[in-house]
Image 1 (tube, one colour):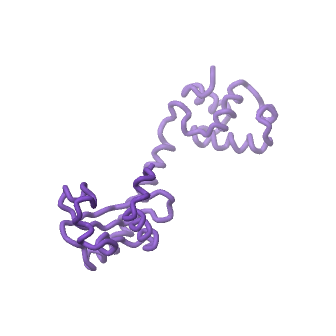
Image 2 (cartoon, one colour):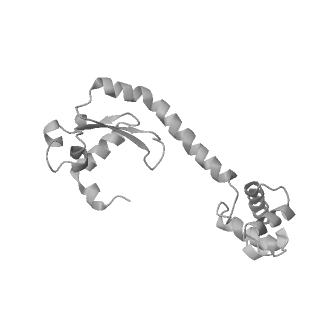
Image 3 (cartoon, helix red, strand yellow):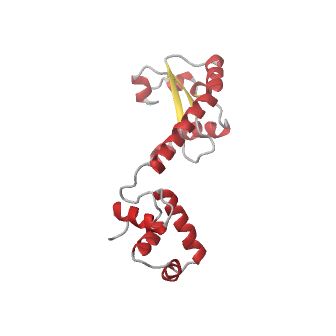
Length: 181
């Protein structure tokens, strides 16, 4: 995470406040801080060493609690033209980001399971009990849950393991080390 020291910096706090206030729109550093301040030696050595004096921040996934941003750095102050360009390309960049995120998520679901990591801890526990030969009713009693909950867990397990019946789930579970056997 970000240290408390970084969040204590008044410049960081002000920039974050502006980003929140802008919604999903671009935030241009030169509109938040004047050039004199941005040229100070203690401003940001990373920007100064690269010759940058201004930057535009563009949020690619605004509804999320974490930030996926694009930052563009420039050797001169950005103006209305660059802000307009960023505003016009933002939906396209956000769509590319979202599509990549969905592809990564889908890939995780379709990858062969090697250790059962895709299953939740409870689904793994249900599969271990299935592997021990317990019936759904017995699993419900052991785990102190409703029978319908066991059915639902097994539905999810079958989908994640790519099987359609209990015996195939046990065989797949044995193959990936999820079920002793």
